Length: 258
Image 1 (cartoon, rainbow, N blue to C red):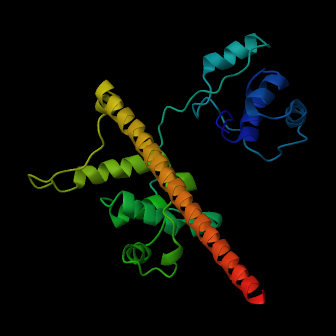
Image 2: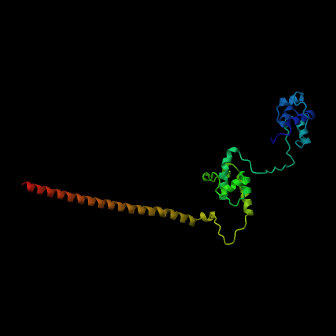
Image 3: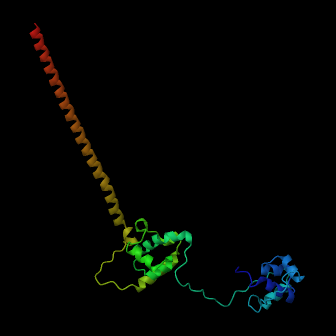
């Protein structure tokens, strides 16, 4: 619709009545069919429609019209609007589709945990919720609090990454200054984490643990085999002793019988 003039049929009526443009040129400019433009010229269509001057509305220039009249192959070009209309500011919470409303509590929980600097009004703009819902999720009094899973609102499609970044940046600017001496935990810079010393230290720590584990496993294996060998020796000794006792008893019985 951005390349279509305002009120196409009314514009076509004016061009048919006030210019010598071909039906194809008018049809291409007004996004109509050439036969429909021909019907307008014959009075069979657009009856009672008052023509709209595209030159007066700033959609065409006189030079553009004269150039098209002199050259039947020239196509009219729609002029851009010189007036910038500001976008209407949205009032109230963002509208969320019905299919996405069940994801709002998860998004609120994610924002509360990962960006505690955000105010309730900012969360309302991002997700489209209410203050009581935000307060219930903060206090763990939400009816479905046990089943909530923190989810990124950008991933859920509730807001754009640009909107989230703008709100976070605004909240950071308005946040009170931190007291002196407070240690702020931050991630290690990339230069330090990827340095040769850091990589060597990480590699040495990773290679040391498997060696110690192997040594422990070998020590444990030797102890198990030694224990098994000792148990086998005890069982063999007991078996020999039993055989001797049985033999002596048989000899005594034979002596008695004799």
